Length: 450
Image 1 (cartoon, rainbow, N blue to C red):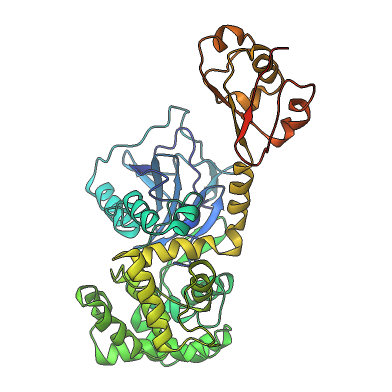
Image 2 (cartoon, rainbow, N blue to C red; image 1 turned 30 degrees about the vertical axis):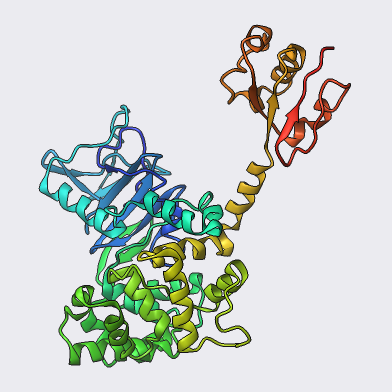
C-alpha cells in the first residue's frame, strides 16, 4: 500500500523552492476555511489535491518542500525504473509484484538539500505551486502597509504571520463555497470530500485513504446529482449545486468561470449571484479566492462582529441581520482602511479569530510575560553571576551572559539585557540585592554592592 510522504534525510524525490515562513505558513493558510481539501497527514505535512494531482507539502523556515504522487499510487520514475524513494514511512513499505512481496528500502542517508530543477516537469510543478499560493505577491510588504494603517492589525500580525490567499480553481472554489451556507469548517470539509469521492475521478490511495479530483461541471450538472447528494447529507444545498452547474452548462461555456478573472469585480459579483445558492458572501469568497479580486471582502456575522468589537464600526448598529447595504458598507469600511488588498488583510483577522487557533494567541501572551531586565550598574557582578548560574536557560539568549564568570564581562558593559521569567521571581526577590517591580512589564533590576 502506498503511503503519505514524510520529508526525511535522503528524500531525493522531494522538490523545493525558496519561501520564508513569514511569506507562507501552511498550517494557517490551508486550515483557515479558504479551502477544504487539505489534511495534516503527519506533523507539519499537509496532503491535498491541486491541479489534478495529489501533493504533500511541508516547510522549514526558508524553504517550501513538495512531493507529488502519480495516479499509480505514489511511485516515481528514477533512473528509468519506478520505485518509491525518499519517503519515511511509519512501518515497512511493501509492494506486491505477482505472488512475490518486495520490501522497499529507503535511500541512503545523506545531507538534505533543496533539489535543483532538472526537467520541464519539475518546472511545471513549481509554477503550479507558485500560482496556487500567489508567491509573486510580497506578503511582508502588505503586512507592513496594513500595520501602519491599522494598529489592531499590527498587534494581530505578530502572531499570525504568513496567512496568504490561495488562487484556487474557480469551479472547485464556487461549488465548495455553495456548501458553506449555514455550516462550519469541519462539516464543510466532510461534505466536499464526499462530493469528490462520489463524483470525482480517482487519483491514488495513500495509507488506505483514497484521493479524488474535484468533479467536473458535467458531472455536477447531471440530473441524478441532487438526489445523490441529498442521500449524502447535503440537504437543500444539493439542489443548489446541481442547478448552478446546469445553469453554467446551459448559459455559458465550460471556461466561463475562468474567464471572469479578467472581468471587473462588481460585474463578477453580479454574475455569480445569478447562480442558485450564491449570495453576496459566497460570491465574494469566490472572487477573492479564485478570481483575482483582492479587494473583495467576504462579510458574515463573524466578520461583522470583528468590525464592531475591534474597530468600533457602527455600520448596521441595532440591526439583527446583514442587509445588502450593510454588507457593502462594511466591505467599503475595510477597503478604505486596508486598500486594494483588503480581502487579504481580512483573511488574517478571520484566521486569528477562529477557535482552533486560539492556542497561538495564548502562547503569544505567555511569551510577552517574559520580562526584559536591564542591569545598569557596573557593580552588579554578584547579581549577574548569580542569575547566570540559577537561570542558564533564561539568560542563554543574551550574548553577553554566557558564563558564570560575569565579572570580566560586567566591567566592560554600560548596560546588559537578559531575560527573566516569572519562575525566577522567588530567587530574585531574596535579600536586597535586586528589586522586581513588575515581571509582566519591563522590569529594571538595580544592582547594589553586597
